[in-house]
Amino acid sequence: MRFHALSVAAVLALALVVPAPAVAAGQPAGPAFSVSVAAAPQPAAAQTLPRHRYEALRKTSLRSSPSKGTIVAVVARGKELSSTGRTSGKYVQLSRAGKTGWAASTDIRRAIVAKYQTSSAIPLYASACSTRQLAKVPADYTLGTRTNARSNGRVKVEYAGKSGWIRSSRVAKVSLGVPIGKLGWKASAAKNIAKWCKGVPLSVGANKPNMAEASGRIGHMNELITLDTSGFGGKKLDPNHPMAVAVQYHECAHILQYRTYKYDFAKLDRRMDAVYGKPRVADGAEHMADCMAVAMGAKLTGSEYDPGSGNTLTWWAGYGGKCSSHHLAAARKVIAGQQV
Image 1 (tube, rainbow, N blue to C red):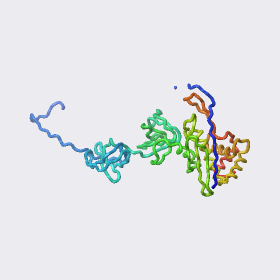
Image 2: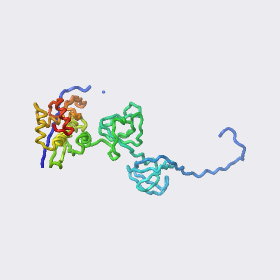
Image 3: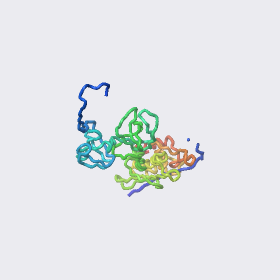
Image 4: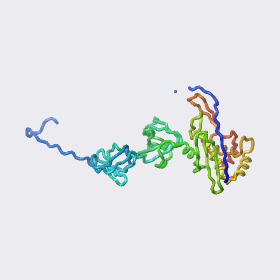
């Protein structure tokens, strides 16, 4: 069994301290008395409306007729029902699991008909045309819509108990099976590298070593990427932070290196040393993985202001070498599966 692992260090440094800056007139002739009989109340006439999918807001009984009919089925909270399109007053005729009955409209609401996922933080607007923002929807967040209403390049969705509009160009439609809410760390990382390393298993956690592994025999290699979730000041690092993305791309780059060189690790090391050249502080494969990450779109350094501490933080990812045009050209070839 062949085993190989390469790792990348992500370094955080404190660079600069910066202070924080905030009855009508006239009656017809008739007898002196009259007798009237009130008409018996009639049930509201049933109407036919467009069919929709609904979900139960609470434990809901389906009855054989509006209001006080016999119970034909009980539906648990959150379960979906299908409308027959018939209504009677405040009651709606619904079906579930082969049973059809009536329920109060106050016990149901329209079901989610479509879901959208953000790739970056986007605003939730008050209306299709408004610039007023109700909230900021984070990256990798799955939103639901009960109407899929569209106008002015926006789609109406729900977020954190609010109903608002987002730009449809800033989201991707996803399966109804995707849970509403923010993706977990691992799922976000997997999404970030899916273009090149789709399906590669990930192991993530605080203080785990950043590394890419391949073991087994040719034709039956097992690949694994391990990622550290730790960030600034011991806090959990956002998986979409540029530093986290740089590390994710770097480790994915190693997997691509392995595949391109058909898991001949000795040949891979020789060629990467030769292609990257000197000076270098680590193996050529590590520096080339940095350059491959850059070619994928990663940033290897950056700084940002931390309002909590009043400091400006500078971070680095990778091994500190330079990626020349020569290195980047070679990196793109390896990404494409070509040996250099």
